Image (cartoon, rainbow, N blue to C red; front, top):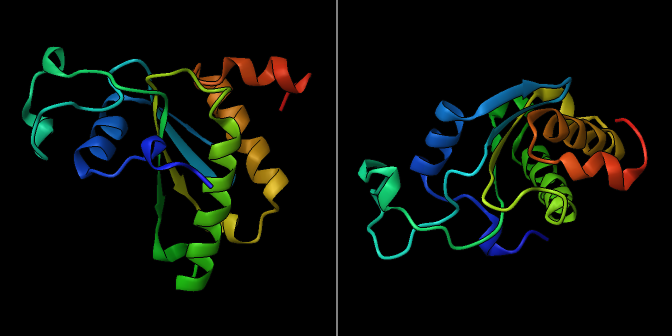
Length: 143
């Protein structure tokens, strides 16, 4: 499972990543990545989206956030897809550059896609965005 420090929680973090980051679409996922901005805030309130970026302090590795809408399926299916993706994100921690925020928006096809296919799509998207450049070298081939 994906450890707590590697998760995006605040709406401001999701918004910043989607607005300022790069985006790439795949068949079952849309991946947004914000490289090197900051990875956590120390000593500020919940509304840190109004604080200038030069006042923010980095405190860790990459963080992942998931957006799984009702279009994916009912609550049981949405939670199953989210659990599978969190598990995949935990596998990718060593491959993703520290300080990267990643938001994964799940498309309806992910409910029926295999875990291997979703992982391949996610790795390929991260590599294309420059967030997972090590992914291709470690797997030994293109995704």
